[in-house]
Image 1 (cartoon, rainbow, N blue to C red):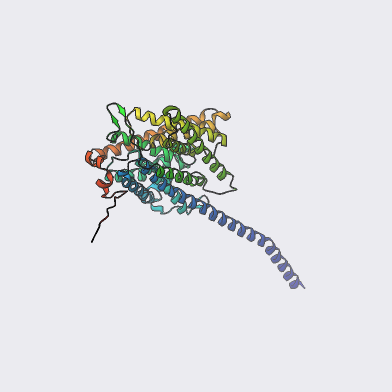
Image 2: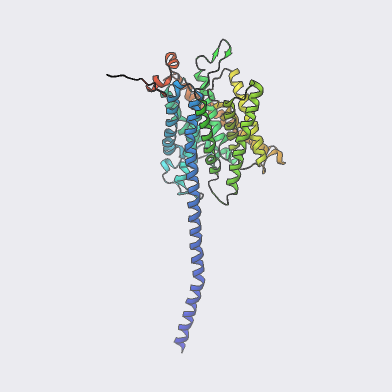
Length: 444
């Protein structure tokens, strides 16, 4: 009887253990499956967004080629190709480590070639996150090509693109997007998708580069400004629409998570509204100043709105997005006029579109952010942090890229010869024409 009782008690204990353990195991299994699903969905979204940002290279290429003369189209498109290739390799070898690695407030110092990095960034596979960020790096580098178009040596450009994608851009990114260490991130500086990190970096690099390079032959003659029209405005228009489309990966992709879709949809809506408002106000501004609703300015106005909303897109209401884009459209027109007065030749408007509006969009957080902006009763603290950050980044880029460009200028040389510039860089640098002539040979 005693043995039988002990056996019964043992069976009862085992049953209770199984009853208690099975739900725990099932719960753990369900949690694991849910996490795996979340990782899969978020990784897929970030990968798709990275593809959209990659496609923006085509947009940059079409815009820049369309806004310059046909004799330089091959040259500018080659630079766009090489920008992305250089960014991909440099960001893999060293750029990711400088930007997201452990280090100090200034620079990261681990994760070379993605060795010994965590497999996940949040709920995204690290390799997908790298792909997304590498596409951003390529975009920042490509901005400069348009501002220095039509007169820069191709070899000099290769040196520049390695420097910005391998060192300068990653350092700026570390300050702001390495949230655990970056000195600006620690101060509360905000830049959701890169008005400063990507666009101001590229825009102010173009600014100092074009100053050191000098204007194109025939742009400023006897104190007068001579227009040098682009050769293919329809091509440029296609490029702007490609960029606009790609921006729906650029900004919404920066959520790096799908979640319930509320943040993602808010960012997408704000991005679209700001671009539309920028195009309208740029059209009205150039119409008032120049007497005609110039399509080139309309297109740059749309891009200005996109650049301006890139930093605050996750933190502002739709009406604020419209205001931010509208101001951006005016800035791009006034900025282009100012550069001409200063005799700074920027063929595609890279400086007003990306540099000036990169600053404006970043400052707009301090004004319009619902959780920290001045217009929502939160004082000027955030605006002050934003101003400090934009000034620090702009100054850093101007100084570092100024050193890079000056070093190239006085060693290898920045600019092609006068004869080559007049003939066109396509033949002189690449031995190829964008629009080759056709000859008909008659044989008997």
